[in-house]
Figure (cartoon, rainbow, N blue to C red):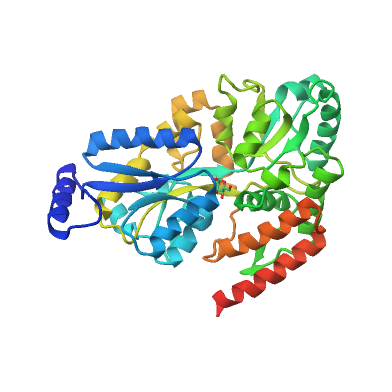
Length: 426
Ligand code: GLC
């Protein structure tokens, strides 16, 4: 659709329908994230407005995925025409689709000849399709990574990043002991263990590195020997080896983990790719000292990385769907996706950006990430996933805190999940 047609349609809609939004040439976009993400979107919106003549109002959300979901659910459940367009965590797209809140994008894609083959195939197939309809598009992809202090590994005679969990524990114990002589708050390994969605991402990854799974033949299978062993190892990191700090299970989410590591207080960090460029900021204590590797695995197994990321979709209740599509198209355009990478160091949903000369020069680690993005471990793609996750969060976190043991925690989680999903399967 041309710019002129879009403008004409918006004017007509404005004249004839009267609506709760003040200006029918306006799209309301709801988005959250770390402060640098919001500033990025403000810039993108400015460019879009200039190029298209379509106004975008932004509703700012917090960083935490659970809070972002709740904010959107309130509006969508009451069929509000505002927001028109929003970012969704890959973890809750199918819940939104099953609730009938997302517009099918296939006609738009077809009309504008947007080929979905430009995106990571696995990501789009696992996350953006519902009943064979395309209901979202990937703006950026996340996969869990291990960040490590190159300088400290060298200082203590370790030449490479740890490949197994045993190595991670060994390196941490040795280096933590020495570093504490000058920095008493130093720890071996920080990761997301607070009671929220990020804990399940960590758990799926760590359990996956032990051959553990949480769903099989559409049945939730959490109470397995591989998963119990994984949870036992995580508890030991905090309470036995004490290489992970005690606030892992009370408050460690992405940003807490990132700042802990960035202040120079940890040897290893599990986080998403977004942390990379922040670690290279001038005010970062670890600038130039960080390496990136796959999350370790149990001996005899292989590494796993959880599929994360954020996708853009249009509300079924929007009264500015055509205008919203123009904005969606802009967010997944080569230009915007390249900016997302150049400015934030994030990983675009489009594969072609990974081959861009400038990108390859600025971020040599991108080619490595591009390869692992086709093989990420998804969370169960179920409309009631949020309920499953909340139950898992409660029990796993309780084991991490020492209130219960791994066997009981996973047994109770599985029981409670199976009881709770019965009502969805009726
Ligand atoms: C990141 C991921 C998202 C995940 C969340 C958990 O934002 O992109 O998929 O659910 O972290 O905290």
